[in-house]
Image (cartoon, rainbow, N blue to C red; front, side, top):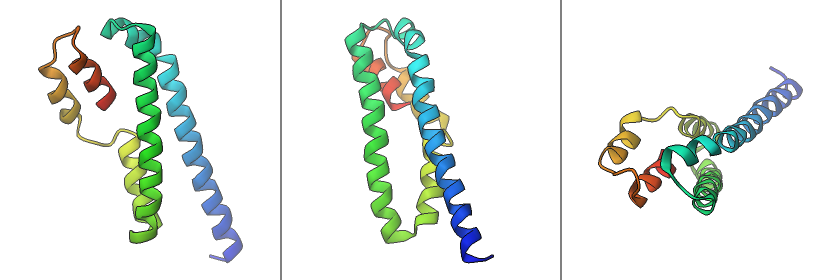
Length: 114
């Protein structure tokens, strides 16, 4: 594979990653009314949940970049995309939410965790 074609391939992969990130944020934005009804939260609490979601994405993006420098960009990119798109054990979030009662803050924290 020539250098030029590898660059175009890398650009396509990165554009897919940017598209997935923006699409994921749009999905969360569209789901806000449903999240608000299911958790019984106020508008300010929903803002906190969405801000936590965006903050966790940003922190993991910066950390992933540094780890990519240390351990290899391709490996960290694959791990990061798998983790952010939902390829993580579903039991983790469910186990946290199972013990939470509906009006409590712990359930809201679990929703943020999931």
